[in-house]
Length: 307
Image (tube, rainbow, N blue to C red; front, side, top):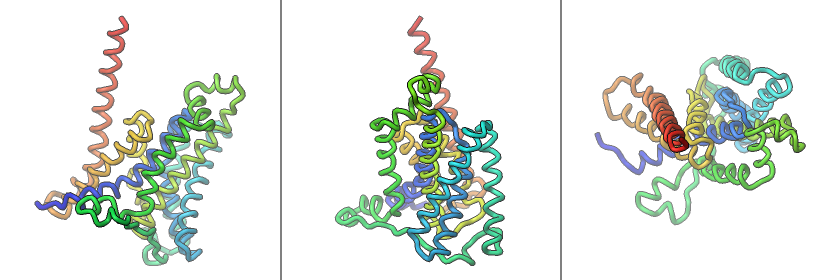
């Protein structure tokens, strides 16, 4: 089996892009004290929203805006149910994901008459790939770092933007304060509900970018169930990184590598396709297990040291 290492790494970075956006969306809610499992459905809705708005507007960038706004609207919908309606967040997110799974197919059928994909009914728009001057001409490195989607570069920039927001701004301090102790935050005049809405808004923004990448860069159409668990993998990535933006990106890259490995094996081996498609999710489960074992052993060492 022959593997082009540069192409393999470039593909891993591409496949990590929606995971990075999903992880950033999840960790913002985490720092606000909310575990948002609805990111999977938010990404799916955003993917459909992006191609739909792009098709009817006839403009790629308006389509990108449509995908982001769809993510924000779905995030605020969950926020309204949980923060204002006082519903249980876990049950709300599960219900929303189920609604998104069927709802996107229903909307797609109303708009196109199709139940599987928009490829035959909607005009295709693709977010451009960027060739970086000078870097593109460097052997090996140029093939990896240059020629990626604009949203891929935005994903890595977003990692540092989120870090800056959380740790260097007033709103970031308030988000973390509410997440650590909401009663103490309220006692100093911070509105827990308002901060929660802001956290869901930011979460929706990054979920919208993830969905837009899937339907306007990964491929150029919407497909039934195309998120394929990436929202949950993003949740796992930020959980393994303990809410660190940079750590979440690194874990997302690890999961992107397993996906790239699975794709490479499909084209260059005779392994059953069903088994190969299982690799990224199996890697996620194993990574969570090892992370949990490490955390438990670390806690036990701390407890022994305090005795």
